[in-house]
Each structure stands twice: as structure tokens, then as C-alpha cells.
Image 1 (cartoon, rainbow, N blue to C red):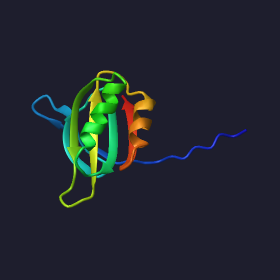
Image 2 (cartoon, helix red, strand yellow):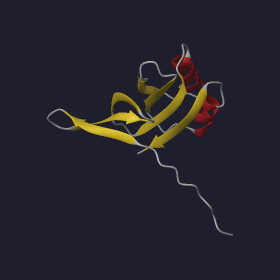
Image 3 (tube, rainbow, N blue to C red):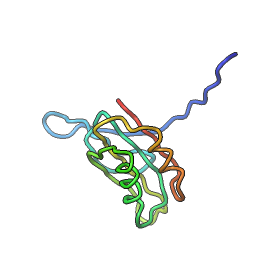
Length: 113
């Protein structure tokens, strides 16, 4: 039986900073921020409102996943924000599913490089 997959493209942007050109992630899902590249990331698109960062942090803590750094991008006047998180270890799919299963989260993805 053939396997059908749907390929989805996502735009991300990066650049190098400083004399050593340390790689940084500067855009995901069309929102801008500045974050040094890491081995493990999680990305979320969500409704821009108070309490969303806390909800994400609580879910990561509940699952014992240590957040190393976080950055948020939101265009002025936009209803949507993007959060990028780096972690010490790969992010389990259960964490992503728990967060994106809640109200006001549109999309989430874990990526290990």
C-alpha cells in the first residue's frame, strides 16, 4: 500500500552575528525575533494575549522539560504571536499536543537539529 504524505513548507530565516558569525534564528511563521541556534527547539503560533507564555512554561515544567531560552515575536497591532523555545533535550510530542490542544494556540512544532 502506498504511503501518502503532505509536504508543508515553512519559512524560517537566520543570520550570523559577530566576528565568529554565530548562527541566530531571526524569523519563524512570519514573526521576527533574535535567538541563538540550538539543538532543540519548539515553536508555537498563538493568539497574542496575556498569560500565554505562562501556559507554555507550565506545560513544559509539568513534563519535566527544561527551557533554556525563549523569544516571542509579535507585529504591532497583530492578533497573533510566535514563541520560539530552546530546550536541553528533545521536546516530547506530548508537550506540543498538550499546548496546542488548548484554546488560542494555532500551531506547535518540536524540531531537533
